[in-house]
Image (cartoon, rainbow, N blue to C red; front, side, top):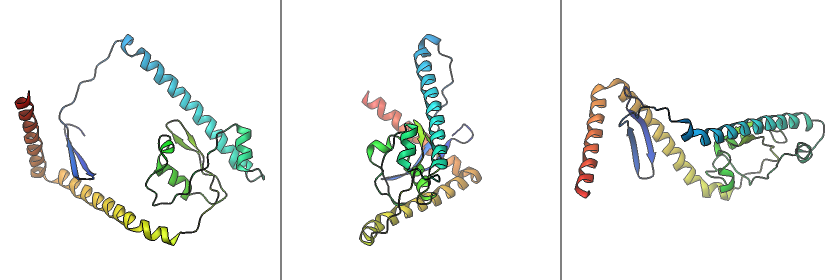
Amino acid sequence: MSATEPFSGAIVGEDGVYVLALKKVVPSEQPPLKDVEAKVTEDYRRGMAGQLAYQAGKTFADGLTNGLPAGKSFAAVAAEAKAKTETLPPFSLSTRSLPADLEERLSLGALKQAAFTTAVGKVSSFMPTREGGFALYVQSKLPLDEAQVKKEMPEFLAYVRQARQSDAFNQWFNQQITQDAGFRQKLQQVSDQAQQARSGVRKRTS
């Protein structure tokens, strides 16, 4: 968002659709070194650690690409590289969440992208994450469980329907924002009224 484009796209929540409006821009400032030295030092260390982790992970992924065709197992190549391995629970394109410890380290979207673009018995390209990255070895492709499919299908269809509705609304909203000055003015009025209402509540309760 900016002063010339003060409204966000539509954000779909569980109880409604929201549009964010820019209230004000806080000017930047240059804090004294003593106030930020510790944080800058920690950020630098974390950044360097991330780079080293990325380089080590990339080297490991390249080693897998070369080692597996030579007849080595995934576990053997990982052991030689002193890389940590982890066996993931089965998942599908309709999986909506990961175990809590995994969600803290990688995104479900990145995991799906790696898994479903890699053939069985092959290793994905190295995928960077906040802590470094991962390479995924696809061990097997499980047959569909028809009972599970029937159970999960309604929820999955509802998810797809909501995503498409959100996308359609975003396209319409963005078109209105760019092409209809009256629509932009109305949104600004609604935003101003909401701000005034909140100010009034604060005054009455203070």
